[in-house]
Amino acid sequence: MVNQMHATVTVTADNALLGASESGHQVTMDIAPDLGGQNQGPRPMEMLLLGMGGCTLIDVMFILRKSRQAFSDMRVELEAQRAEEIPRVFTRIHAHFVVSGNDLDPKRVARAIDLSAEKYCSASRMLGAVAQITHDYEIVSD
Image (tube, rainbow, N blue to C red):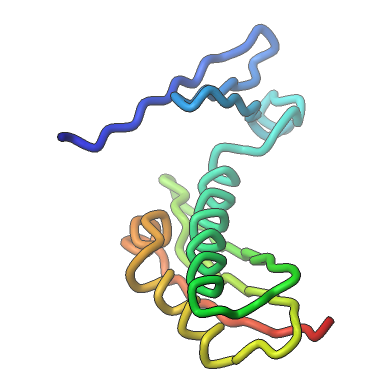
């Protein structure tokens, strides 16, 4: 069986972009206002960065739960640099994980993040082919 995915992006009447996934969800994207957009949604490159953040956060969440690390909150803050020339690909991405909870083992948190980056997160692996991806974390006690 071939593992396929299908999505459609359509230009709307006001020149925004409407993305539709095969799972039935829609997202509005837009181009920058200085290029004629109306700021109705994230830019497509922002969506790529958000997708990587979601992908890695899901991995870390499941790995921590499997290793019985109880967290009360978790987020990843992403910072990316893009090339100056076209195509303006990402050249560097830094992911800063903030994990909240009591009695979290820093070694297990670090290992979960490493496993996501090195093995599980498809988005990180793809973007890592063109960008240097780094990560760090902090643990916040409740």
